[in-house]
Image (cartoon, rainbow, N blue to C red):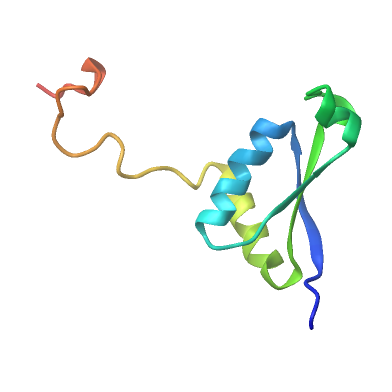
Length: 98
């Protein structure tokens, strides 16, 4: 049985950012494992070395994951479908084009 080798692709500042980036990668079908120092996790530390969360991906997906995260950091990944076409009843007034 072959064992997957994992590599750190990014270090996030806290679990919120790590979970956001995990979702980004998993949406592209890249498996993710998050790793954080135990004390930081227990006390929900989000700053300093205890707040760092390592994002690991399989070595085979490393380059693609690195490119996605680089695009995210540079602002190239944006939702082109927002605001949505038309104006549903519950869409905030700032998107009213009339």
